[in-house]
Amino acid sequence: MKSAKQLKDIHLSILDLVPVRAGFSHAEAMHHSLEMAQQAEELGYKRYWIAEHHNTESLVSSATPLLIQYIAQGTTHIRVGSGGVMLPNHTPLIVAEQFGTLDTLFPGRIDLGLGRAPGTDQLTARALRRNRLENAEDFPRDVQELRFYLSKEGKEGAVKAIPGAGQEVPLYLLGSSTFSAHLAAALGLPYAFASHFAPTYLMEALEIYRSNFKPSEQTPEPYTIAGVNIVVADSDEEADYLATTANLFALNIIRNTRGPLQHPVRTMDEIWTPYEAAQIRQMRTYSFTGCSQTVARGLEEFIQKTQVDEIIVASYIFDKTAQFHSLELLSRLKK
Image 1: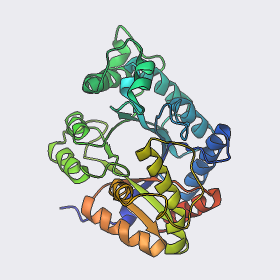
Image 2 (image 1 turned 180 degrees about the horizontal axis):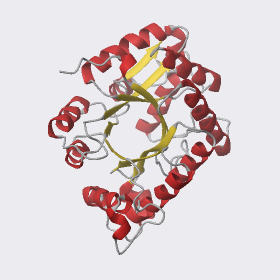
Image 3 (image 1 turned 135 degrees about the horizontal axis):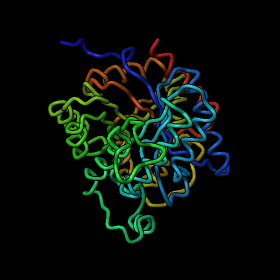
């Protein structure tokens, strides 16, 4: 029997939606993400993932493969990928060609995480897909088709991904319910759960995945990643203050008034209603905010509970220096 995992045993990675801060441009948001990836590489983080979103004023991660190239070109060894590409928005062949190209440019460093949600509202989803009749229920077939294009067998197909065929770019399935847990287990793929904003089914999804997992050449044993929100500062009070930026971001989602990331505030009491506060606290169940000792305690409990192999961190902090300091303090907890 394997011994229970601890914080020192797992990998730490970063999930980036490339948020725009109030008073800053889109270009500055992208450059900030590159700087954060460079720091993450220096600090020993395993991977840096970009998440596809569309028609959202506060996020500029719509052209996900281009941003992956930008980040990979500005770093040397950290893995870079999608967390994820929303596959219903794209044909499997196009995704295979794009990530085959990325893997050709940056061999051995590219991850292809796949989600089945649109990453936007339904009106925008229709604009993305035009007359295509794809929907989330076609996701298993599309994953299989994409996997074929990137496989050795794909080199012999009538339609080939060039580049891409035979490169076997590693696939990861993303989920916020139990659907992709079943699919990832059946296909023998790593599984990443979006517990940073959809915590409800985390434990059930992990159990489904592990119980039904079928080994594959890419993934001989189950491999799980959990998304969490983390803000580390020199004191609990400072971390709580910095974390109000994330609360304001979540409040904009609930109110459908999505704007850029805001400066932190001393109190949320006069900004959100009790009902909104409860909604956001539930959404952010797996959030760890505080000084190093406080966050370490919370993460150790989370890891003991979930036994995940990797934690991928979402971090909405307005001030760049404070964000980089948070990532540095977090990286030290593994030492």
